[in-house]
Image 1 (spheres, rainbow, N blue to C red):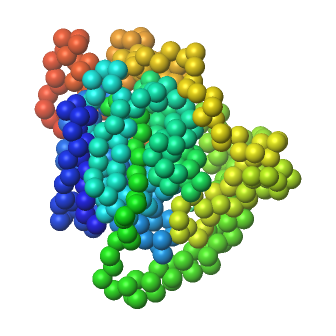
Image 2: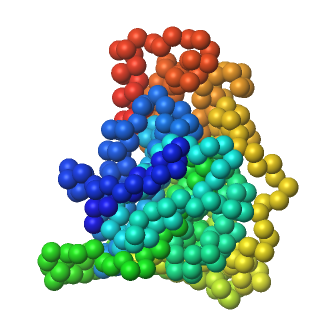
Length: 419
Ligand code: SF4
């Protein structure tokens, strides 16, 4: 299991590589970071052609005996924070890539303007197909259309209109076991990076694939069993999550003042009881129908922390939306980098740093980068780094010279070391 797919969106080519030996012990976040640190120009424009988007599986992807092993990491230089970002999601994509022997898919370059593609991956390799009729479609519409074209068992990672327009809060929706693209690689604006490459979706068909080989099958099974038993014996993964889902933590986190609310300006929310795991559980049971109090987003997960929330008609709100067609009436032009940064998403999620709109680099930096995981002092340091060394594209467009090499080196380190 050491296949790597490298997709060049500028040349519209796909080539197969083998994972270097020194990277084989890495998976997910570690693999993303190693590749991006080695291959990216730290000053590249995150939404320009020199950034890369890496889909990396965990080292046990494809093995159902290891709980939650099919999660997928999406790594890139974040247009939101300017640092390396790994955004992690559930669903079936990582599991199916693992069954085909893929450890990583690297998407580089940028498709010609107004050309949009779907990357299809199967046993024989990868190919770029035109995303005919999909550009502008919301995630559920896109996934239903692609499942109609490629079969009900494929796994799909897709962006919606926000990613196409380069919004800094846009994520990538990955399909779950029922085919709904509701497992999000949500953070860091990874959807915008995918959209700016002209890539609408990745479709993985694992037909003909198999579980990765294990040298000591009996020993491996015994170890996996011990891991699953430990997960089930833990009060969070063995009780709270399977009973109430991830929202089971809402009440506790709110009580200790760590609940991110009011755009990260406060740590507790006055109406937390209305969105707590207990309230969610009662509502799901009361409505019945398609709702589920516990649910697994991928094969082999014993925690089952997911739940399915039905609307008042007891149906899942987002299913069966293909008939709605694309998000009609919205302007779907590809925005330039600067207009995306200063657009509505930036204003809603970000904070102005002192340049007038449209005149400077990184005008809006999400509060998540300031106070979210990896934020705090790191976020402040990162903002300082950006202020000291603006992106190369901005310097060039404003006729400015580069800062001294020593200052550059310090700032590069800061950007890449801090998330
Ligand atoms: S169901 Fe929950 S615990 Fe299981 S893989 Fe999905 S997100 Fe993780």
